Image (cartoon, rainbow, N blue to C red):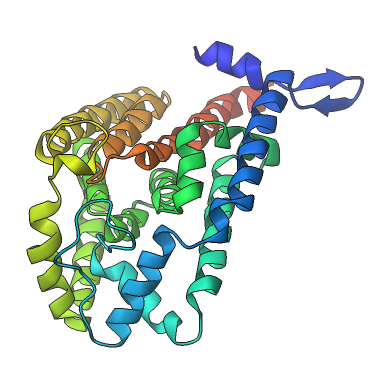
Length: 307
């Protein structure tokens, strides 16, 4: 399958010029069409990003950010840990909800472009993957999480800290580090995460109390998933897959091979263990694209040098 996908996006070379493949152009055309439809319809009104701005506004005013009467799917209900609202809170004093929506949409598009290797055609082609189109429609956090996961695996494990601050599930990154026996990184990320948590709790203790009392009991509701599988079962499955992913990465590292199989399995584990496994959550899977492509580049580098 990887060979077929590679042939699908392999550029066409005519003389000294390189052109996108026909398959990539077809997917990019579909993605561009979906993007235009979203821009003309769904981007004309607020969506999930308003929940983030609203939570920040409430936090800045010292009022409750979690709605005790909300259910999964309630418009503009905030279900995330307090740090996201704490970061946005000071911005609400001079950035309107509409301006924030524009900025958040731009951020998601930049995330998609970065995940596509800074290639416009690949970015548009990724939108043809319907979960990405739906993610851009509702403007959630999964593309940002995908970027943080790639950075955590390729640049620094410390990127697991902001990822876990957005959604609790990326704490599985610690399990991955332990399974890979990267103990120094494990300790560093743990200490950094605890420090961020301490600062967040001190800044808004009532918000964390509400998060535990309001969000905690509802996190496992079947209505928050496209599959009628309890969150506890999905998280357990994600935990098991994370351990396997870490061991695969460890074996690959010791043998000098690419760890991309373990990394891809970790992204799948994070997706399965997402508290709200709706279609938008599946857009997190696009993190596999840059992980796979950079792994191929790293594997080919020694061959180029040898020549």
